[in-house]
Image (cartoon, rainbow, N blue to C red; front, side):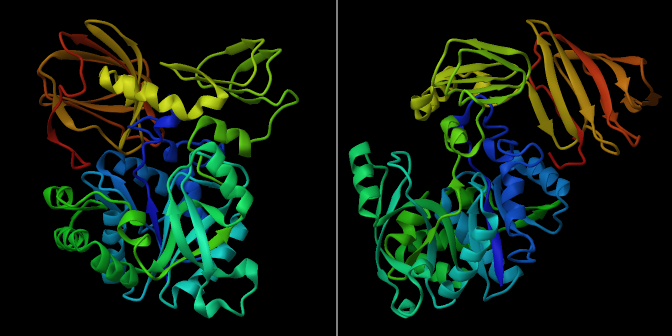
Length: 478
């Protein structure tokens, strides 16, 4: 039995300003108009490889985002494990391995997949995993090495060794090889040498192995992490549709990658080649490798006009973007930020995010449009003592019963039907009707209808931050 384990906790800072902490790249429709990278990852193995629902690891902030995206693609019974803090891949996979053995099948193989990669040949990917399953069943911990097609300095590399002992009769293209060594991100000349040798693969971060085999190797090579993982697993609690790990216990585990903790130390590591149009979409220039360009070799998305523009990536999300006389440039526009960068320096965009974080600017973490379990809100205007928001509530859902210490709110219904609680009063409002929520009054907004409810909210007061919320009751356990 193969059980998918989806790692969905990354932040994708090099794809700023579209990817941000509160809504990172794995949940964005980057290469498909209908599906996010996360959804594509889940569907890639559904039915074609296994009928087992996935085990998903994500951070608490994204739990409802994960839940909603699973619901949208009709994935039921997924096990969503919430990491209270990031502790890298070795502990996360350890928890998933425990969960697979206890709650699914003690002999399960787990297929570990990052949730933010693109794969063009999904049928070819499934066939390679099926071959790898045969290797894994013999006790090997299999990782997938990507065929090197350019001297890339942004990836780690794997140098393959001899064929695994029981692979002598297998065709070369299907063979699993022992791993001679893992190599950190090289400089350009070293990367060129690796590519020319034909002995190296890019390290994909995808794995297939028996859950029990991984835990055994973790015990042997990183016993402290193994102990911490055991303690964390023993303390898990169910919360709505989610599985919570004990915060302090998990936080005390040493943060380490699976490569450092296990794969570089075990005698049972194997690499299998993978040539399926893989791309980790780590930087904006990656999109140029998998997206069709126009006659000027530009990749255009959104409302864009160009003149004498070549070899560029231009994405507009909220307004018209026009370019004249530029080449090899990245232009990314969102509602509250615009990025302009030399295409060859995509890797350096992270420096901008670091600067935003050091300056404590909100643009590093949140968009103007913020998703919540009940729907979303979008900031239209923000000034010193007032803020205007557009709020959408899904049918049948409601915000928490709450109050504010520092602001009053005016609500106008622009679409749908609202049930509004104000103190002891509960009243229904329809389009073009409005109400006022005084400072300090307990209130709640709900959508009793069958279509999305939209309102315009005008906040006024001395402080307008999202942390000025006192919750008395909440359907989402916040």
